[in-house]
Length: 334
Length: 62
Length: 235
Image (tube, rainbow over all chains, first blue to last red; front, side):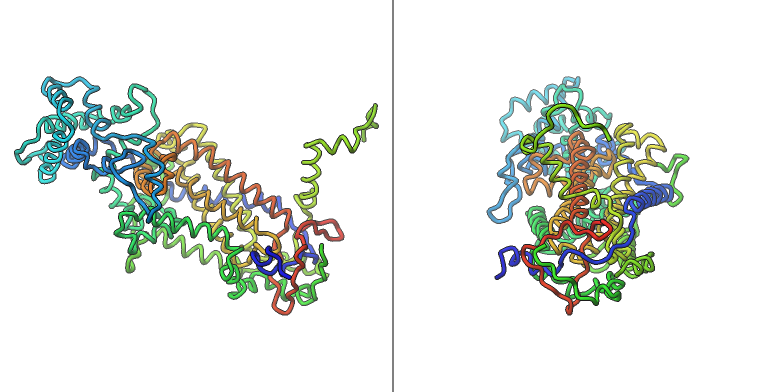
């Protein structure tokens, strides 16, 4: 009569070992292994060092790609930037991703509020001394209803997408239109960014206002990630999703090869073009991870090692010896 | 700053864009490809190479 | 040995209520010294694949030692001095070595069906170590405070947000990520590794898969623990 345990675990054909032992020094082996690995890691470090590409700054972004920077700023005011439309955990302006009815991003809610217009544009501009024209623009913005603000900002961001970069980080060829105070605000934001003054203001935005110490780089990072500089650098370093970037390291260093299967799903349909790619891939990987942990109770998968007998190579000395050919002793209940 | 400017700079400079192996939809930097190939080589070498102490084990077998 | 203590000795009845004594008795029963630090190993332990477990431990030790040195001087140090960069390099290459040897160890244990004979928990703890090592590495990558950290944190956030984990685990929050990387996750990995090793010592290294002609089914009540040879060497 097979018990439930047998049904789940399969028949147990591995009695406790009652055969012979040979001397084996585990502590010496561990010591040698540790010295060997330390030496090997030191040699690799001396031969190849490690990558340390300096971080991008808001100042660099606004100086090198002023049109892209200004466009992202205007999109933040318009509520059309990726962060503005992201949804939880930053805001409620989007639904987030879902897999059928399963929507954990929405269910867990807004736990790290980020309001791009205020946190990335209006707040920083308001906290630094400004000339009268910018103060007036800020005043007009505050008095204007939300719908009108967004209309101006959306129109300006669309005009900026067709603008050109002038000398010294300037922006030219912006089509005239009805943009309200937005051009002045974005111009002031670009100047602040290009002077290096925006980094600190972004770190002190939102819930970090006037706190001096802050280790949370969410706001400056979300702002930069919405722009083009990080992506431009990432593409050069083969770090984009469609470049299997999750597995890669900057330069020619080996990367995170163990993430190969995570990376793989993003390369094929339906995940490649799905808006819910992340939750779908994470769900598949979650299930596969659970299956990996539970291999001993998965019929078939747990039997592959018996069907493809690599074990005969591993234990060839044992099988060739008299111990393997002798019948194992009866084990009784012990 | 990176180690390129310091006395302990690397013997081999890997701070340059990677050469990428392209095959169908697979695009993997050569360093990762080498790593995986070496893993397979090491695995099969480990199970195939003789392990020291065979004589001692033979003596201890019944 | 010391002389008999004076006064009335502690009775067995009194000891039965002692958590300390219960723990000691259980520990000694499950893991007597001969099992923890044995004289030898079964003669079937005769393949280089067996060293990849201890190599994984060695790589973890290297990570912890270099990690401690990096923690001594703080997260900016390695950007500013060549010696700091050197220790960062050793730490990074130790990560590559760790995953390299751990995966080969995993392959070996799979092809040996090492979960047999009541060793399922050994497989499960080992698999969980691999799974926990991945966020341990991720939190390290996003703590680098360089371009790599900027990119990885802003990309990884999408996957984590999509499944709700981003609601409480923010890859862009350096303070949080650094804390998880240098304390919480190394403690988790180390505790799991300790449990994994103790289970291996308790159950013994899995015996070979019996060849077809030698298969003998083990009765359901058979336990894998506490086998010793005539010389007292435990499995």
